[in-house]
Image (cartoon, rainbow, N blue to C red; front, top):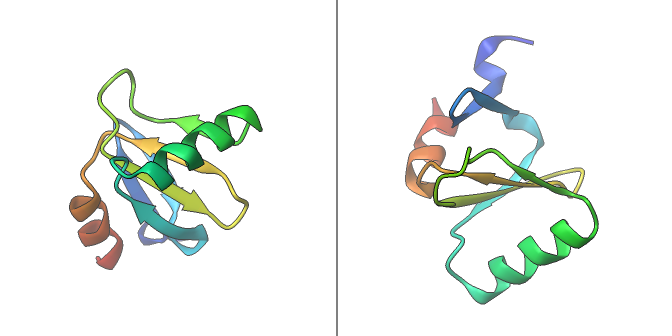
Length: 80
């Protein structure tokens, strides 16, 4: 895989761009329920390093990844 196949989600963490299903804002009730469901089922990965969650990334494997980078920034990075 080339380096361009990965999305920098901040703080030294990367996700395979081809496996990302969606990027959500963490503010909505549905996003909060999704986060709790993933935590309960051991599918939640926290890549915020203790910072505020600004985006929730969902992958094809139903993994939920928390990022400290804004949704708009992640979307712009994914287009590169």
